[in-house]
Length: 439
Image 1 (cartoon, rainbow, N blue to C red):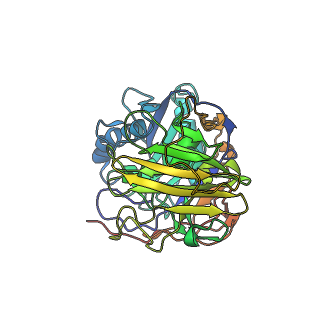
Image 2 (tube, rainbow, N blue to C red):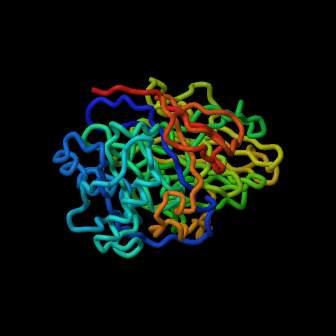
Image 3 (cartoon, rainbow, N blue to C red):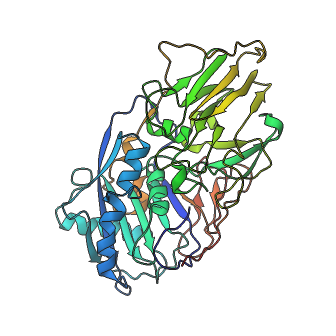
């Protein structure tokens, strides 16, 4: 996650994610969502915003502004209007509200509890008057080891604010967790052999890892959110050549191939500059989805380029050209890629790629991938403690380049004080982001 707060940021950034349900969800087509968001500025008995007027002025723009980098604009463009954030109150935010609480020790549970109690005093009912709650507080004395905190999936985000405004790289990342997206890792698969992969680093094709704002979300995450419907995500059930439109481009067409891979799924997408996204991404990319958990997918990287958001690798450096999996009798090869579309050969059941006609397969009524309905737990919680969101926290710790530890660890400690041990559910890696000072 990349910080976009104004002023210099000297913060080991990270996120604790409070899980409320299993990631796969219930397969169903998602209906358009208009979600009432309530940003609340809170202060402590011993800490206040240094420039409260500037914070108050920036908050509506951060969440609901007309520019492309507001949370509302960002999610609306990514979802093609299927997911809209709207202000829960006419003022677009509340506060600052003074809490009878010291900032020391990063007391996120008490911050959540006391904030919700204050909202109740004001006659605001969770789930009725507001559906998502974003709590923004001054960072100077909290010593929180993260820049943002979110329930996964769920209704709550916490923003540990340095300066006078947070940015979409922080807020958008947290809202991605609310939608059910974990931290997207990367697996290195030598020569495209899916039977010889190892976890190594993080994806750079999503804001949920090292891609930052311009990458948006990846195809598995879009499937998880229910935003690739009406045939935009195609479940491949026969060998053939398939044409892909760019993931974030305009118009209709197939944008993701969803293929059985043993007990997992293989999702194929095509990335190309479109709108405010993918200016530095190009080519066909693939993801392994464990046990149908689209929010916990990993980018498949067959290259040695180690593309990152900060190096000079070409936009297609981590794009695939060919994949094979002997156990599943599956082969994939890119026929062509560029100019806004790609053609991909898929050979199932041991079929030969060479024997497949290069003409794209015709499917008058494509079978769309099942798109999980947003969990009921994503509606606003009425609980008063952070843990009452049904949560099991996950933390990412600070450093600029995202790196990974192997395996599917279930327990990750916080890197600094201010919190207890946390649980990573199905993510399998620890994200680290070095400190960055920005003028």
